[in-house]
Image (cartoon, rainbow, N blue to C red; front, side, top):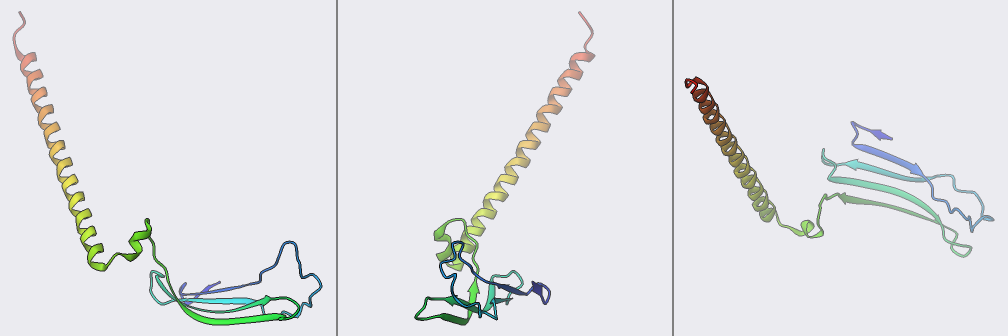
Length: 135
């Protein structure tokens, strides 16, 4: 469930084994596993997470209830090495990409103008050819 303008996400659920190796244990689990994620930044890159997790660890240990709070940082990358790039390097690479895009756009404009010039010359030659008296 999402709350507070999609900043707070509440997840409630439990884990279960398909083969159910602990079929004879008591079902005293009143509170399910709960996880709260609160986005600290609008883009969701930084979040605060609080959780409560119940696990059955066997006959000797019984139920273990794990609770915790943590900070979650989410990074998007295409290559593993991108995670470790500094801000200066990221900015340098961004400027290089922009320069390449600008150069490509300028070349495309230049090519378009050249095509238009050739088309005008061809049209002028056709018109000149059509205006000449026949032989």
